[in-house]
Length: 279
Image (cartoon, rainbow, N blue to C red):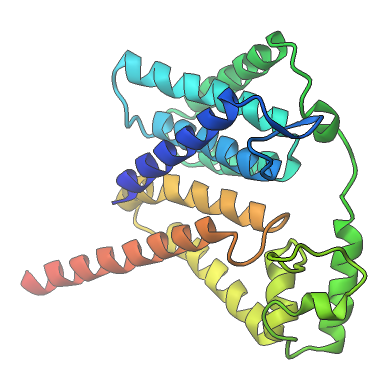
């Protein structure tokens, strides 16, 4: 199930990234996007495609040269799209996911590091050779897009309302911030959103859920860790993204990864218990 999940995600992200890569539309003059969509959506797809391809190479899910070459090409295209979007959050999330992948126990760590460095270098060279400057200014910018001020004001609301203000109600407490008609105002941070909307009890609940997921992977038997590693990398990627952008619903990849890791652990434990009972 884990491997099928990774392949399915890669297929979805590849289709989306290819659409953006072949598109000549931009949401802003300096950032790549498609059909006027938020560039961060394309950035998440591209970063996810890089991470998934690296995971499949690491666990040797593809043995043939053609398959490995295809995965490397996916990395190159996705890296170009990621940079051109100028979205820094998905780039940071990608680096964190790759860090988990590269530091995981294994005999081929040196090969993994060399492969990732080589692929990244080729990707940067490929992007530079296109002479496209989309996203560069934004990617290298130190601007926080006003999110620090929003976070501080959200903390003030939490302090004044420790039991929460209700789902989607932040805009009523911070009316000076511009809000989309459909999206509503949210703090662009999963912990802050739970704290302000569900209160401190909700914050404790999400912290417990995140810690439980980490413990499942950390305490997994050695023979099960290769099954957990790719999905755990996706979980780390989605979690870091949730610290910078989107709301609770928009971070759906995080919930899918959480459910898969914990659900798979429960299923494996059940099988182990049945096996011991049969013996």
